[in-house]
Each structure stands twice: as C-alpha cells, then as structure tokens.
Length: 327
Image 1 (cartoon, rainbow, N blue to C red):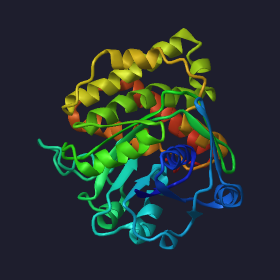
Image 2 (image 1 turned 135 degrees about the horizontal axis):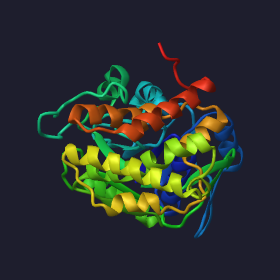
Image 3 (image 1 turned 90 degrees about the vertical axis):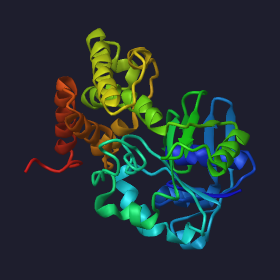
C-alpha cells in the first residue's frame, strides 16, 4: 500500500514509522529542520516496544510523490489551509484522505443527521478550502492516542506503549478503504480499529483535551504535575463533565467513566497544545476549545467552568502573540 503522511511531526512521524515497519510504501510531507534531518539521517522513533529507524522518502513538495493509495493528514489545525493548497498532486481518482486530528473536525456535521446536518464550521475549515480541495467523499475521520513529541529534528519519542488509532467514515459505514489503512497500521504494531461512530470517538478523546489542556497551559506543567493538586484534578473532571454534557446534547452520550478517566490520568506528558505555547508555535485553541463551546451554545448547554478556563488559556496565548488580540 502506497501512503503519504502529510505532516511529519510527533504523531505523523510515529504513524509513518509504524507503517514503514509494517511494510507499507510510506512517504512524508515535512518541512524545515525536521525535513532536513529526515533526508540526511532518516526518521528515528523511540517507542516502548523498540526503536524504529526508517529511511523514508520525504519532501516539502507533494508533486514529488504523485498519486497515493491513501493520504493521512496529521498536521495541526492551523496548518490545514496549507494542506488544502498542496494536496492535489497526491490524489488519484479514488484516494481517501484520513484526517487524524484533535478537536472538532471540519467535516463533523456532514452525514450527521438531525437539525444540524450539514452545518459548516469555518473555524476548522476557513473558506471551505478542504471541502473544495479534498471533498467529503474522500474524507475519513481519525482519532489517535499517542503521547509523543519531537525531541530533536528527525527524532520522535513516544511515552506510552498503548498507542492506538481509531478511524471511521463520516456516514458510519465500515468500508474496505478504512479497513485497509487500519490493517497497514496493525502490521506495524500500532493498534488500529474502524468505528461505525467516529464522532463519539472524537468526543471521547476531546474530553481529555478539555480536562487537561487549559489547566496545563495555565500551570505550564504536564498532566501528572498539574493534577498533583487535588483541586486541579477535580477541576479537570468538571471540565470533562461539561464536555460530556455537550456531546450528549448533540446525540453522542458518553458514560461517566469517560470523565473519570480524565480525572485519573497519570501521564507526565505535556499536552501538545502546551508544547506549542512553549515553542511559540500556532495553537489549536479554536478547534480544541472554541468550537466545543460554540457547539455548547448551539445545543443550549451551560459550560461555566470551561468558559472561564478557555478564556484564561486564550489570554495566556495572547501574551505570547499566539492568538489574536481582543477586538
């Protein structure tokens, strides 16, 4: 299977290494020092089950690679407009595009059903750029659990051994194309599954982002150190409970254990959004935090704690020039 990973950061690098280990013909779209290091020395990924060293074709120009059997997009949401502008050379007549993202995805209300079916989310897809460049017919949604970071150009470290990727079609079908991508990941040692309800999986992951993300931005510490204060651990649970209420109001109920898992998290890992703040990179504040609150307003769900914590997180980002000033 011929696949391109569009965005070779921590998640993209880990996924690429797994695909390479499993025998897929994988290539990377990367940039900057990371691209230069991969070209010079290959990609090195440290995982709990061993080190993967892979010589993988890498470029910053999709036209170098040509049409693919599948494309996996792993950039963060601020980079999606550049993906929309560059992805065309990778797309054959039937190439699916798997978006492995945090937060509310641009396609969320396509094939959703109910009163909000077809609602556009410009925060996730400004100007419908992805809708025009990729289209909903090619699109698959993906949710990944992989506590990873780029520790040096060309080098990725994964903290935990239970990494997994869940993918699914927006219309809920279990398709051969989704199963083929999952099988390629499984062959490389990453747990992968196809869900008939990818939106519920989006919310299950998002509860963790809502619980830990704003608090870790404010403390400037990883999850375990932030949660060392019992009050902050309880605050994480309350944020997750507000997120669970939004999901339920939109027809995606999650069990109480979902919020309990947020409260009981013990990983030392710094959430990626805190890594972005510390490194001065564009932050996913709108799709991770802003869009869930927008959906809360649409669904009539009160979110007093998240309103406060997200406002504080945005102010922290503004202080470093990483979020627009208040008009």
